[in-house]
Length: 512
Picture 1 (cartoon, rainbow, N blue to C red):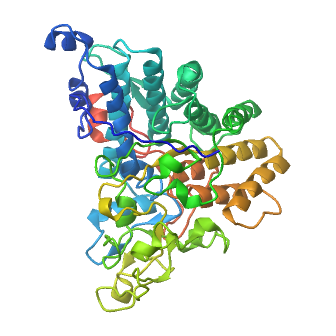
Picture 2 (spheres, rainbow, N blue to C red):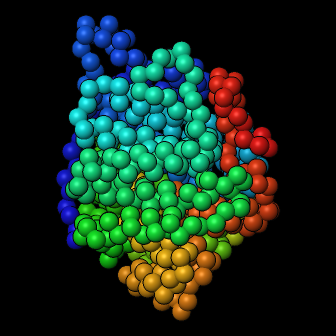
Picture 3 (cartoon, one colour):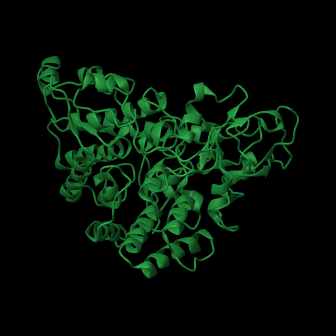
């Protein structure tokens, strides 16, 4: 059932304790206010809780470019940012992500951690004030959401109680404590969340979807080394029951057009998006524009930065005819000449004319994507991805495309995986093949773990889950194109040095 939603602009208030740019934990905590401080500063009036909640949601917009895309995908097996002569070198930062050689001083990792903790502490701050049951439930959902992502990346989570004195250092939750917290919070609040399917706020469906994620990854988070774990039937049954709560609601269904989930009006029209950012064209959009500028060539429309490419092995895992692989799209091709999905081979403008690169070569994107590029391949190496695309050329730098964190197809695949891990391969295969039929892909004859992981890659590419999936399937450390087998150190990110100095209870992860 497709629900046409109307997105209303939200004016983001400037809240003094939103500390996205802070790098020191003490500085972050000093930027936040206690109830007593607020009362003193505004003559006894408590702040507008609605604005505080908006602030906690606002961090979601920056998760896409800083983490859910750049880190979760560039550290995985589908995306690479080649150094092209003098372009895209950035002191080796992109190569470090792809080849698993980053250290504790990596700016991308530091910035992502700071954004996540910004969202976490904004949600915590709200809970010290007088809020409605639904507002508190939404803030607790966001707190659990940010805890999940911090736990996923770093394995330890700095936490503080609402209203705790700023002089007190945050406590630190271990990975098992953090995932237990996520689960208990979501199960406690789900009935106080709205039951509708508004994707820009925390709903019951969003809580069920995140619970399914939590239970699916719980064995990994509970393990000592993120390598030795097993999937308990009790956890997998929880995955299934939470997925069924969404499936049986009747509020979601697979889109006939896969790319309807990623256009500039995706969250208004898509019947799959459960929880996403709230981007409004021309007003607020975070870093979504990087989704197309990063890969597009300078001579394409819009003119891009000629950076990110897809690895050939990842692209070759798609069937011909699988709509997720891409092709002409009525919302994209007539105005730009671009195709949805992946850009391969000769590129054209909107009138069908062949494009050239800046050296006068035909703009033919090649399957090869060396991590260091020079010569004739300098501007043309690598297939480019166009999953989120600029169908509104008036707002290419401030688009309305929303980034989907939780999507119905992911729920179906989570249930299929849980069925597979409890021995019901027939049920799992049915779900996967039903999905593949909608996407135009051939039915699978059988299903093993490698098939399930590959299907998750085909369905969810560049949605921020690939690193997490590879770790859960024990494949994150293996060699792939331009990456040798890597050390277990890289199963966790390093904490920024400033965080370790500021909080002695926070232990740097092994190997850094």
